[in-house]
Image (cartoon, rainbow, N blue to C red; front, side, top):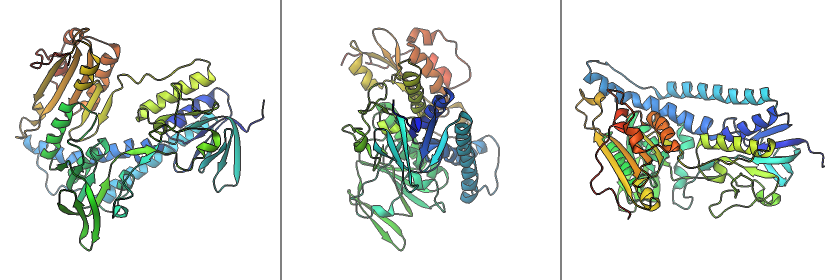
Length: 460
């Protein structure tokens, strides 16, 4: 057997890479992980965690409006962007430090630098005059924002990564995109008092989500003061002394201080040396893997967003666990991507698990039963707000299994985590109905929905 420097070398110290490295090192293997930026990856450094802090900061303005309806008064309430940024950066640094410390405690060597594959067993640390060999290699480099480089004036636009570090809060922003990142940042900036416009080329936001969810959320975010322009995109961005002029295909011109593109993310594979190691990409530009995360090179695996299977932090972690069990515990495992819950931290937020109505109609041979309710949350009773919650259950007409749950409204991400247990377990609508409600809550609607939506059952 060849003598290698490490049993496992991991490229990328995000959530997936860190978990795989730690588990393998704790099994007594010699492991190293390379990170070119900061330990923690997309989620901790430039994704889920700082974004959630921004969401929570921006929700305060709405909470103050509600509080006034309950008799509270606030004089000269204000928000200071630099104070928030400092607090956010301190916490992110703390979390990154914990990730790095946990690697050290497990016996993993942390290599600071960009690792590039030279062959199937060799990586070079760029600029460090260091070459490393490993018996096995795991690629966990994640993804990066994409923007249309051919668009005139695109150099004046930012992505979500720069949005975390704006030197000052803009007065006006235009966000291009209709996915979860776009709608989340629209809610963030609007909540912080920024005049916010969302533009998307498609017919409605959140492509791939249930149609009722898409339509409901589009209406609700407009109630929060966000201007939504659909079926349109940029022709060019022009920088002037007064700001950035967005020239749109429909002839509109909108002047803003910041233009942010949230038009998708792509696997981070550029200049990684994949060809030198025999690692192939699929048609979408992601690393091609089998169900056990093995690439086209026998000793190289890949997990997380770089494989573009299901780009969620908890999924990357579960893929890491499955990799470790398969490769080092002789216990072949692969992650089950069915009925994975997800949340969109828009304002109001979205929680989803399972199939949309359209997906269910395609997969359930004898049709579906659909249960829908829309209502004003109790917390808005004194405010005069016309904001509404949407709850929707999609049920297989034959088995009566609940195959999809869709919620738009306050606390929906918290509710969907528990609903996911029932959907994953395959519980039926009768079993949901047999569960006693907790009153008064919004969640009780999930177990008290009795009437099918008219004309819902269909095999179409």
